[in-house]
Length: 106
Image 1 (tube, rainbow, N blue to C red):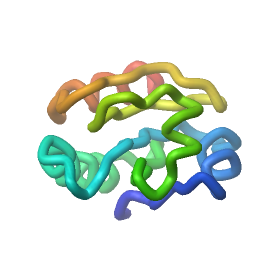
Image 2: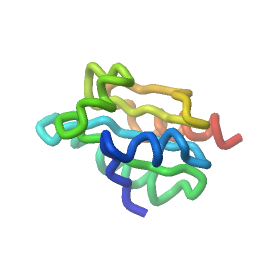
Image 3: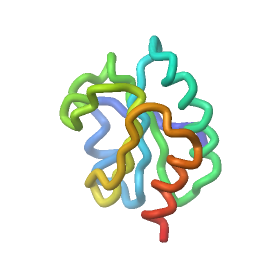
């Protein structure tokens, strides 16, 4: 499945009320390192059935980015049960993102 596009309008319902963990990539189209994260996020979205994976364009959705203190991009945040449980600021690589997921899927 491709990453879901989260917005200021749907974030609470889709991420905070989700029945499974949600990995969220905060990005912007103009951000070079964000373009490095994108294919990794897409690969993870296809690999893990137990996790919802999506993206937030911080330029189009400043409310969510501000609420969660996203000051630098890319920032990848893992939510579980409506709460942030892990965060990686800057490009972490596939292994870092998978490690975040594996901790909540145990």
